Amino acid sequence: MTVRKSQQRAVNKYISNNYDRINLVVPKGKKEIIQTAAKDKGISTNEFINQAIDKALRDGGGYGNFETFTNNE
Image: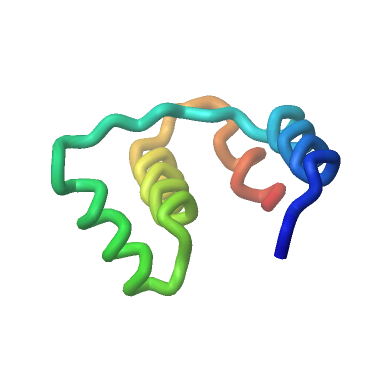
């Protein structure tokens, strides 16, 4: 399926308005391990990383109003 430029601009605008980006750097080889783990769980690499971050924030506590973000999804 071909995506028109106007469609891609609309998607990019939505992402820009609703999400923050983080450039994650990992040691060589770790990317493939993360991708395989995500695939084994049947989720995207992005979702796998987000779940790991959410768990760390919940378990660690004391990070402001974290529940606001997790309850809105």
